[in-house]
Length: 55
Image (cartoon, rainbow, N blue to C red; front, side):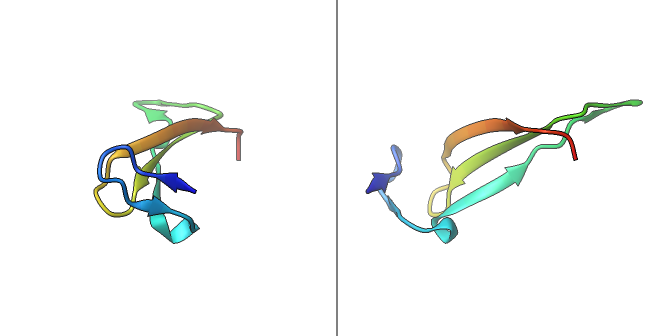
């Protein structure tokens, strides 16, 4: 079982975390990858991040 490092909430289901798509658009340019952040659903603390491939 996984717990949030900030509030110690149990993270068992997909509903227990929030996925925030950070996008990759900067001005006139658009990157071919998407950046995302995973946060605790209870306190909002960042748990992880990553990069997804192009659409």
